[in-house]
Image (cartoon, rainbow, N blue to C red; front, side):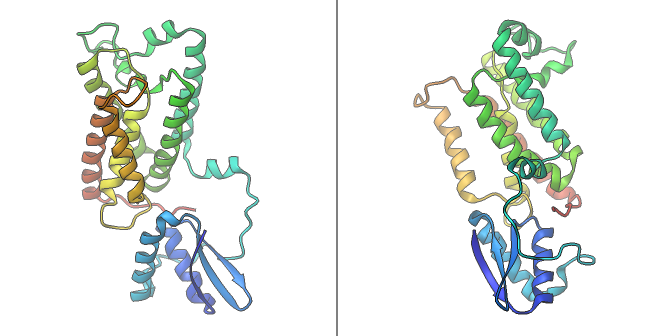
Length: 274
């Protein structure tokens, strides 16, 4: 945690806290003697938080509506499972559960699952007569590491999008980025692939462009974006010991960037995160 500032003005601190929470900043307020201290849970948000604080100082009337949250000394005894649930919506959870169930089924009968969920049984025929196949490859993972990596990013990015913009927007992104990534990967390398990573890169691109040069609840630390882009580039080299769906990653990223620009232009209402 990082301390951002302190003040004896409880009313001003309450309004600042409410404003930062409305913008999705992970902050809390604690008491220390006669001082109230504003703390940031994740230091990667520091630049965005300081920008918002300065905006609030310039215009203290930014807080929309009556105060709904009262800063108080916080306890860190909340169960991890409850914290994880709070960081997601029902679509985030359903996709995660389905992905785990499919992974378990793959361990029992890989050929049956592959033939049922892969984009096509053939190398030269898209499944227009079985349209669910355009999206079902995102549920298939063949190693525990692959599953854990993708679920982490799906929960982190998908949960944030669902809580900020709503379930319908996350569903649209899942279908748009997932189908785009699957079709491109299929056209380049055939039907034998699976995983959420194309969607994950789509959500990354969406958050990146949607929040570019402005603080929003979907703002991502620059270091995280650089890491993911470097990982994409490394996938095109011979440095990795596993097969990587490079075309799906790139297609997902580009489709997510396009979606980020479009949704930013449409400017849907951002929900207040709690």
